[in-house]
Image 1 (cartoon, chains in turn yellow, blue):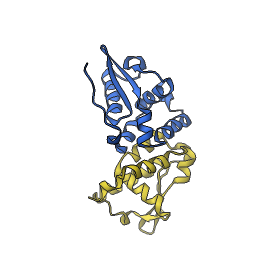
Image 2: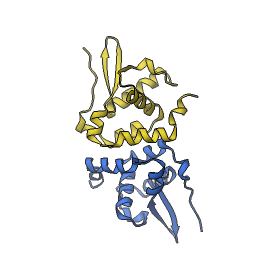
Image 3: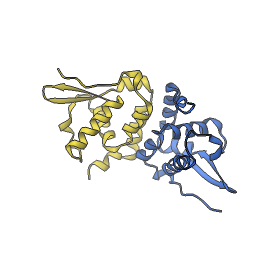
Length: 111
Length: 111
């Protein structure tokens, strides 16, 4: 089975995590994975960007350690690495999600 | 007296704040302003970057709403807008500073 590279918990870098979460499309993906508690295939997200841009956003999240991507057949399934992130940088992800709610930032994706 | 533009509290954007804090030099500036509780002139920071890059980093922080910059004579004095950020995005700045401590990230600036 083909596997994708993920940083270990202690390899996660604050620079990279913050940069990954600074983008509204990537934050939308992370928020949705946080609220659904299920793995999701990339194609189910209906993002307002091209397929190649979408692939780039998922890869950026994976390489930062924000999400886990695993092949299931020909699909890549995505899940949030919340336990790992909470252990590495306590409170950070929750603060970002709370800020996202305050700003109502997902609205930028519905236009 | 010449003044510089700052976003109002409710104009602060999560995208911009996270992008501002994703850079280690800018995070170092914000952390230092947080621990000192005094205003500081740009020149006192001794950053490992050129003067023009330093000016860019301070401006990026100001435009995101992370710091306030005010002229005092010919110097620009900087202070952290912690109260404004805490009101706009509760817990975010503290989580970033805590993560910075965990990572020991200021070490990247001492090389």
